[in-house]
Length: 155
Image (cartoon, rainbow, N blue to C red; front, top):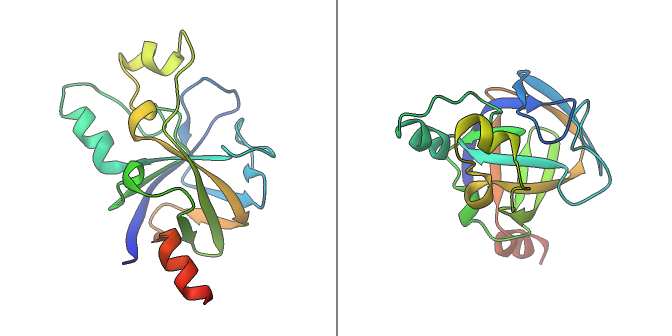
């Protein structure tokens, strides 16, 4: 079953370990990440993603956070990223990403945890690699294709 999400925020930062700011739109470069983002490069964590619903649940605890405060590049509603299998494909317009990592260990003295008291990236955040470039903006549809569906399509 294919899942559909909606991009709620597109965030970048100039330096690693800092909160990101919602810039509304960005260009994804194949095997690089978001143009102008500190985490872009030739590695497996080019793009970080968080579910809008997980951020809203965190806000319900009484913590005030903005898009990008957890260091995420994309905030998407309708997708529970941490429950997806590795290898899942995210199609947003022309851009295509592949899920490469679920969660991460925050480094000691994580600026995000210091700023908001806790970081949800270790349990709810995921990372992806850009396998096809394209433009992405707030309001775009994200189609999620799990590895099983992707393999069935290629048979």
